[in-house]
Length: 186
Image (cartoon, rainbow, N blue to C red):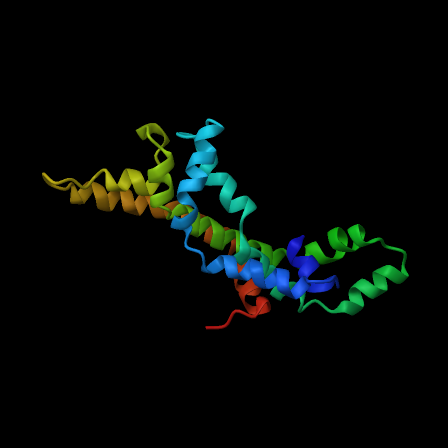
């Protein structure tokens, strides 16, 4: 919704606020790690998966940037035609814009999934018990100072890639379309 507001709505300070949101991309994750740890400790969420789920859901400036760029490519005439037909802004957003944004949303979902699947530091800080460990933490347990189980580690890495392959295979069509339409070029 924020990306749509930055792409289509005119309000005072829009560009400045968008610049501030983009500036948060330059702040390393490690800077906010201690304040977030203190917050999650106070609300008794340490050693649960909630500290791994909530921050990426509620603070994603990259998602706002990607979707804003995509929304700017959607012709304004579609919204104007819907307004003439009597649609309110919420109807325009849910029935016209969101269905057209499925490729960009799937692309963003794949990017977020890949980033969070490979996280090592954040789960290392928040999770204490081995039954709650994420895949990268479990993979690191195969390495030790006294010797490494390379065969087991390689087998575990192969199995750990399976969900990534499945997610990409399910969203491949939308992913390619989303990359092509969102303006990301290599």
